[in-house]
Length: 297
Image (cartoon, rainbow, N blue to C red; front, side, top):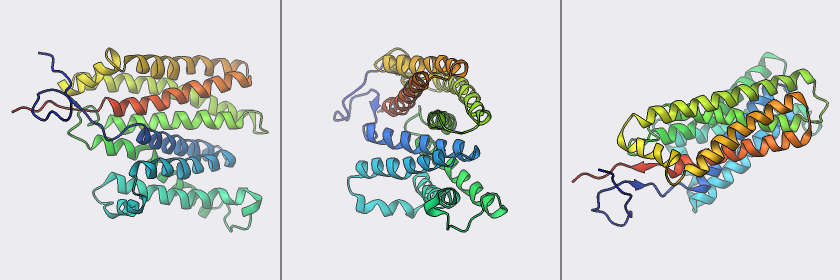
């Protein structure tokens, strides 16, 4: 028997129910926080401080603004700090604070306005600050996935593969934006080629992670299978197949390969647009297909 979707106001009708709390604002918060942290990691590891600064600002300004708009009551924001021992939301917020402090400390001496900051990036102390900032950035990239995966009531999210998926997409978005900023700069071709290769490998890795995710969830239980079918054959199949797979991965891969052969600006712009479209749509659609199992009376 195929179970229908039911109106959430009809409490005693058997059928799947979609979660309605997290929509585009949360998707935007996830998107900006994760690609910003990914950009910081890719840029900092390649000693590209301008890219690291932009990544830091995307997280602090973009993610924070989207979360505050979603809350509606910003004065209650401080309560999120209360339960780091049990709440991934609280842990994520602490990670953002640590990321902001140590990320800013590490990149500050690279800019003339902050050259007075007494940190030598090449010293053991500077490398320790870098390590802490990178670890915090990784937590920022994955904690949204952990928040969602700790939802047993929503089977499609309830898997440890979700943080892995968010991590791989965060690094891909970060590599893309770093490559865009490096284009036309005086940065060495060797470093640019490293980021190019990273971009290509991450596209392939993301495709494999999505495939594994959908395969395992299809065979896990009936509710998760319904979510998979919503992405592949039902109401969200067009944005997922066209937007996430074809535009976000296939076209991005073709453009990335083209850019390695001919470093033309319009190819890089097209690459960035297609990848970021797929990146945002993935997060948005993951939220939209989060559904509750049918209630059994």
